[in-house]
Length: 101
Image 1 (tube, helix red, strand yellow):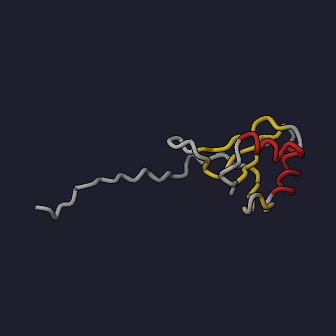
Image 2: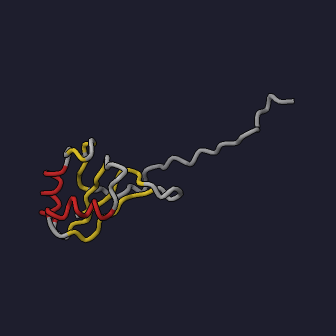
Image 3: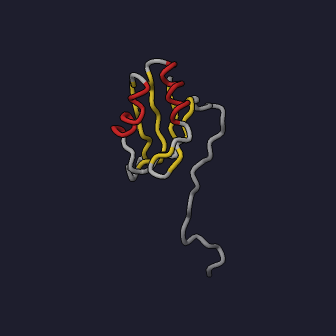
């Protein structure tokens, strides 16, 4: 089962995320989602457990737990809905004002 972990402090990396959840059971993968341009954490990640029961224990124990002054949001990860419309990137055009002569 894949678990969503949100509201993570910026200091948490893959190793720290694994360490936080390792006591609940065997972990297949722990991933922090990062910005593709800057490489900085986006403040959330995913932990995949081999056993669903271990994942449920982790959710129960870690949801709303404080970590470095932030309350974690931990729940079962839901797959992205392919039918949900995505917001297109906003285009910014500079120096294109029409009121200039």
